[in-house]
Length: 203
Length: 161
Image (cartoon, rainbow over all chains, first blue to last red; front, top):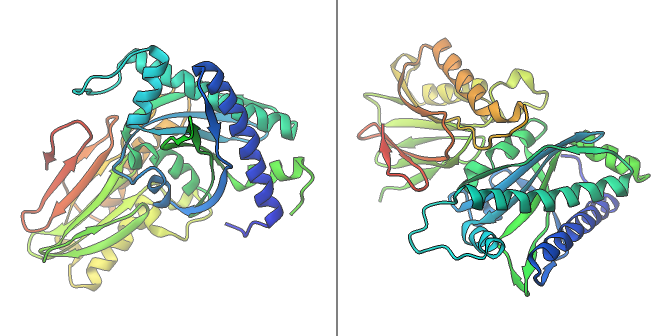
């Protein structure tokens, strides 16, 4: 991956800021809770570094993934460590999960999918507003499994264009407690270039 | 003291008995173990895409089924494990996300399985055991003494193949 100028890094951080900021507001309203977002961090990681962000390749997670297309295309992922996912789904559904929890049922999954959908649509739409570009987002899909396995699809998409991943890492705070999870935008260099150009930043 | 050698994503390594070799969290990716019935050296590669020929940026050869397997065969050959004696065990190639709309993203696991099998067939390396496809992640550990591959999945009992 080419070296990013500090100007471009700032732009990516700002995209994350606006995107995740809108997403947080949407989620906060939905949950009627005190959610806040930390300033996003832009990272360039090895593939193995991505599952490490959530505790390692064998950490059990729940993830919602959506694909978007248009002038810029890619995918977006909302990933949560399993206990966090249970907290979130439980808050939405007004239930607690028992000790012998074996997995989410259909309703739990639909709720998480919808939360992911709202978060990611607000993120993607705000990039659209910022860049004045049109995007179409696909209905999301959900998966609960080991982080490494869940991330293999976005990582293989990144693998098509390089050996590093550019990750805009947005962390949420629930009443100041950091939530172990993140929103991740996966796109290619051509798409980043279009985003930069739409904002008047050339090569 | 025996160790467990860890193979990363788009990575390959060799392993000498009594050490074991593992890769964690295979999804659509595939872990391929190459070993010989008589040798104490084996190898594993963790590939994530079917073919190096479809992609321009293909310098990391362990990323692809075709070049990843070819290179692992060469690495073993240089250490005296001849191609003619090699056997393979493979696991992975799951479809982790099922989309309601038509999308080719979901099929990368299937395409990986196909390409791994074609590459092994072209090199005349028999597949002794496999645990591929389906919709769940896998962690695999190979023990070159028993020649057994343990497949570990979340919320399921270990499977030994």
